[in-house]
Length: 119
Image (cartoon, rainbow, N blue to C red; front, side, top):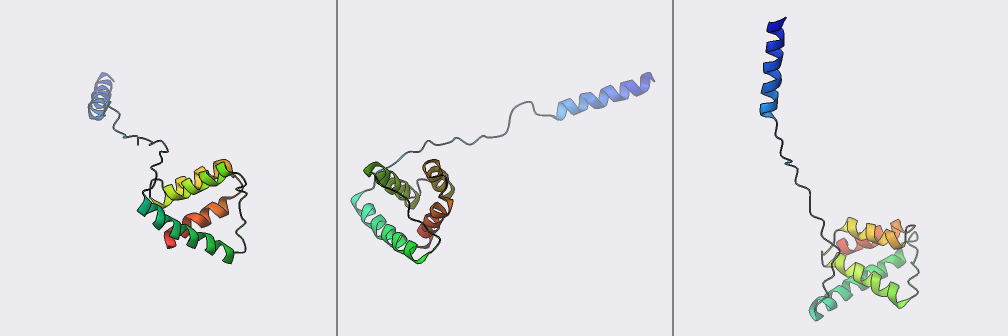
């Protein structure tokens, strides 16, 4: 019986020697939503792409125009689209951030995000 306990103790000690007590999982650093304003050249390229995406929404019967009825909402949406186009945020970040203000418009944000990938 003592022999079995001795073997068990040795096995347990050997397992503790193989484990790593340091946290090796690298947690990604979440970058805050920063906005780098466009240069004049980038703004012109973005505007052309934005117009193409906007015109393509007319061909989709499921797309419902969002109520961007204040200047602040229009600026917010344009800045959000620019950040996606300029790859300052990912497609998923674009959709998630859009849904914070318009939670029922997932189709529309997904459509716009896909539109920027096409053009």
